[in-house]
Image (tube, rainbow, N blue to C red):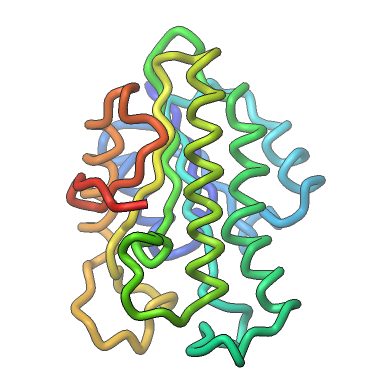
Length: 219
């Protein structure tokens, strides 16, 4: 039976990704801050938790992220920028996933297809930014996308059948998006779509940025 690893499994999308994996017949290993004390911003925590895992995992999901620190909100203008807040958003959204990807390569099979899906966001697209605002969140996701791009090149040298991709899940009905006025996807539908996209990507598409419908998103 395939094994999959879900980082951020206590969140709305993470838990749905784990449930979808099990519905597909895989064994899902879950890690989260809430359930396991996994702190994606702490290198020691990442190394300790991932170091205890055996693998190999045919798929790894990094389903973590924040819009802003608890009690805060994305900035609407540059005048609202606070360096400490911006650093925290970058720590969770960009540096943390980089720490996981750094550790994840050894958990993937070397001679079989494998996949790492990382939840990014369309608002991290520089080419698609027409509204401005949300500076910390946008910039942190843009940084994440660059990390994924570079890491995919490196990963392909040792595991040529591996796929590493940035994925935009859409606006999903979770506490993360509470208060959004736009139409939202149910978590189970988003998870099913994301799994379909990740499984459909070929190694030549590794390092790309795709939405939940499988369409490329501009950098």
